[in-house]
Length: 194
Image (cartoon, rainbow, N blue to C red):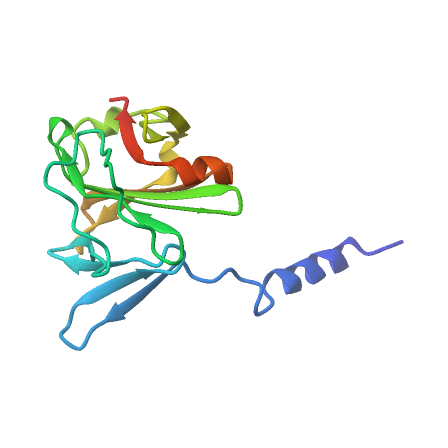
């Protein structure tokens, strides 16, 4: 009669074997002048911890967004993709729900759209947002909807300060998207349900 406990030991050994774990997404670095910087290994961007809030570090090679970007975050000229295919969209705000800074980064590869959206501070009414508080949409240059992604609350992380108080939100996710649709994305928007 086979011993069922032998399988448990083998599975446990394989699960904890070195080299089997996924690489860390973030790397925390302290600069010589004492700044704390978080490097995102997946998207290649960086954020600096300033007044207990993570603030995106702008890439010097990317153009500065114009001050007249629209409320739907559309831009006739989204920031040019980096060599890695990352799009840094213009920063904006949503004062009607209390967001002073909203920043989005997208990347298309292998028939998937990767997205990250930083919202600061936490929007008014967010606690009543339910299971899908936001919907991300990406449109082509004529305004036709290419991608629409309901964002579950499980894809939203609260960013906290050194005292543990929630100060911002970060949305991270992926969705299947064709290479043709990815190539035509010209604007994006964020809808909320709270």
